[in-house]
Image (cartoon, rainbow, N blue to C red; front, top):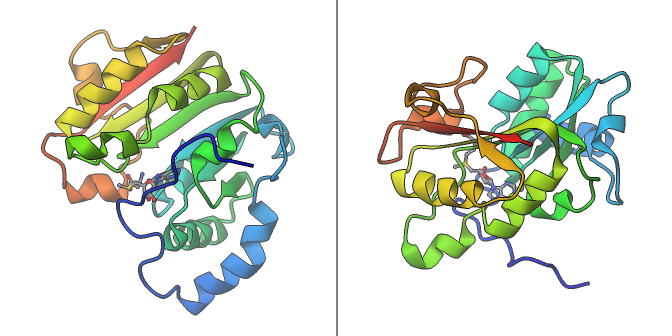
Length: 224
Ligand SMILES: C[S@@+](CC[C@H](N)C(=O)[O-])C[C@H]1O[C@@H](n2cnc3c(N)ncnc32)[C@H](O)[C@@H]1O
C-alpha cells in the first residue's frame, strides 16, 4: 500500500545514541505491551475504565506525556514518536511512575490518525514540533492542511488541540492553517492566552532549551 503522505524526514535523528540496557529491556518487554493496535481501533477503549482519550504527537523524551498521565489517571493517553531514544525515555518515565494509562505508537503519527474513529479524542497536543525554518522545507512541517483536517475530525465536540512553538514563522504558518481548518475555533481572547503557558501546561525538554527565535507561543483550538 502506498503511503498517503510524504515520508517522514527527521529534523533530528531517529536514533542518536545507544539506548541504555535498562531502557533497551523496556523497549523489548514493555513497549510491545503498550503499543497501540496496527489495525483500526477506538482510543477510548485502550485503557480500561478511562473516561476519555488524549493524544500527544511528537512527545520527545515523554516528560509532558508522563506528567499529564500522572495528573489524569482517568484519561487514556496515546503518545506518538518515531525517535527511538525518545520512546525509550518515555518508557522509563512510564515505568518509574507506574503509569498504567499510557499507550504508544513508536512511529510517524500521521500513520496513526486514520486508524481512529471520528470524535474519539478529547485533547491533542503538538508541542514544539520540528520547525523546519527554511522555506523549501516547509512541506516537511507536521501541521499540513490534511493533517490539521484529520486532527479536527478526531476531536470530539468541545475537544481541544494545543500547538506550541518558539519559532515565530512556524507559529504564524500554523495559525493560518488552523484558522482555515473546518471545525476548529481559536480559543484565545487576549494576548496573554497565547503568550503565557496555559495553567495545565507542563514545560517540555525542548521548550527549556529555548532554541527558537521567539518566546513560546501556545495556540489552543476548540472543536465545534
Ligand atoms: C523538536 S522535538 C520536540 C519534542 C517534545 N515535544 C518537546 O517539546 O520536548 C519534535 C519531536 O517531534 C517528533 N516528530 C517529528 N515528526 C513526527 C511525526 N510525523 N509523528 C510523530 N512525531 C514526530 C520528532 O521525532 C521529535 O521528537
